[in-house]
Length: 289
Image (cartoon, rainbow, N blue to C red; front, top):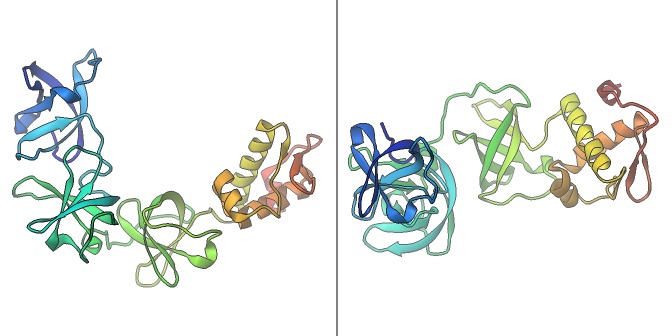
């Protein structure tokens, strides 16, 4: 059966003037309007579509991809505000997403960007957004292991650091003193689970720690050197911003990896830059020797 607010693989039942009718199972036939029909129909006559209600509350499908589906958090722009019902958000579809007044933590205005949770009203099957995020965050203690990779959506800033929604379910914190450069609200990035503090609070990091981090970063640096003729214009004096942009790591992690490579006689410093040496074979155990 097709699921409203999600992408579905649906088979084509028939064609008509308005478009194609898809098999929605218990939901019945679902119209894919003609403007969304792809040029090349797959041989198995199945299409990957998003299902929702149009402006007239009719069940329809689209091949467009929304910026968030039901059950997901997203950072969306406020397009307009209707004094009767609420605000409308741009979520990548022709029909804007409603953010009702009752679901606004604080009033929003046109042009503003907000973190929202996308949900489905079980009564009328309409999809709408909410900025009352705490209702939808999972409060159970997650079963992460130390240094487990996680996906992050930066959702706020505190005196201690940046709040992030973890794996679209939990909330964690990236401490200011662990960051090489500031983050921005709405930014999506990959990070690592660090630990659970008393009270169930999650500590996060943008870098893996210890041996695993050094080993992974050294591999990145050597690979970059090999792809650039054995030389790079990066060293201990490079700025945190350029290192983060080039390698996706903090300056601290970068310097630790350079130290491990230098200690194992895998690189030498050019002042500025580094050069790859090929007279030794680097072993990951050298990084922790």
